[in-house]
Image (cartoon, rainbow, N blue to C red; front, side, top):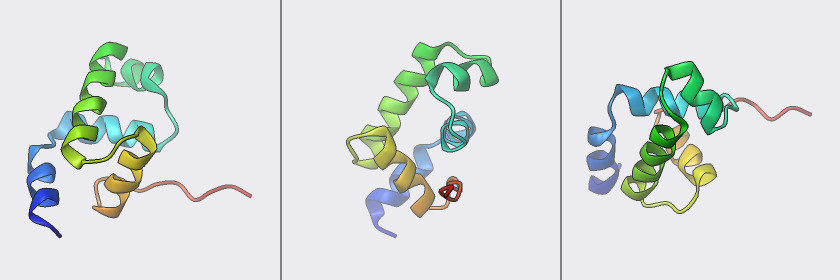
Length: 79
């Protein structure tokens, strides 16, 4: 694991991990916000922050990064 990845993982808090888990389960910003009793704006801002920290450009890339680093487990694709 690179130093940059380790530094990013250290900056993720429990709420970040909960947001990532909701998104990994297929939730959008609105549904994740409702499940976590947050505003959709808060979820969007935290996701944008995590995207910057992880050094990726998109939410799907963030999800792949999070799965690759053991933060979330992505569901198997359905056939």
